[in-house]
Length: 229
Image (cartoon, rainbow, N blue to C red; front, side):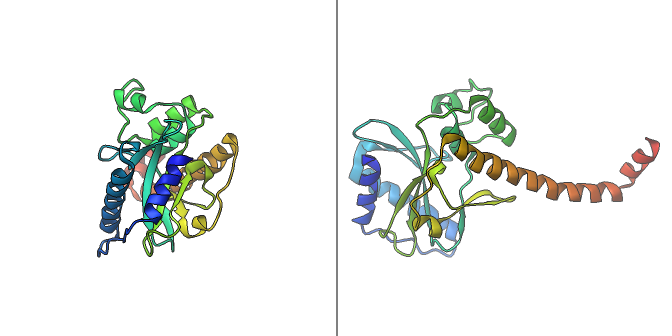
């Protein structure tokens, strides 16, 4: 895809250096801003900036097809897994819901910035559709920002990590050394949504359920209710 090739070439031929900051998250935010400034400068109108708290950091427009691609910028040292859960990104990849629909309230609420798990699941199941869209990650290695930058679609990610606390994470070290994973739409949905997101939710529920039972068993109010019943 030409716009992706252009983005990667701009980064490879730049002087980008990762921000050194005692708070890694703050450093990453500064890195992302510097990347956006660079891409906007070099690629002009083919890079659209988005509002604060949007699920993507930029929208890249392919000069040949004019198609828009939502991109989330991630910088990491590629030594461990990085949080990559985005409910709005998942809706973009696995449904036919438009950006306008998310923002205008026609779906029952304004979801251009955030969405509850309940509404996310409802819309995902109601509007699930195999389209040519994906939600992309642009990953740069903080140790050398210009070496081996990577753009990969959510449905193509091979090295997902799942846990109850963070849902979806990506092992960028392994991912940067792989060619990605080509899946059918249904296979991607099963791997990432059903066996990924929904399993994480199930695991978290099980963990909390144990605490809830301990609380109920130690609370006189619940003991009395059981005795009355």
